[in-house]
Length: 53
Image 1 (cartoon, rainbow, N blue to C red):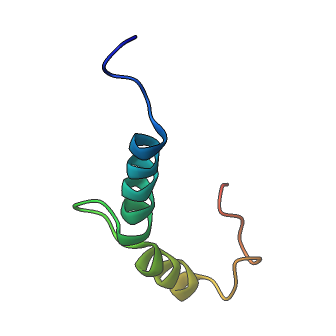
Image 2 (cartoon, rainbow, N blue to C red; image 1 turned 60 degrees about the horizontal axis):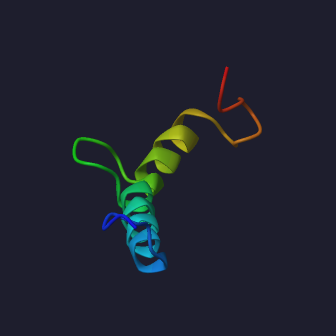
């Protein structure tokens, strides 16, 4: 068996890392809250304009 096997613990670490980056942003990007604030400053609601044009 490979020593690089994917364990539940490793998968949890990956998911925790991905969640933190999605919420707090990557270097040079805005946080999820800032993205939402920016979007709503341009549109009165999320229903007004589709997210993907």
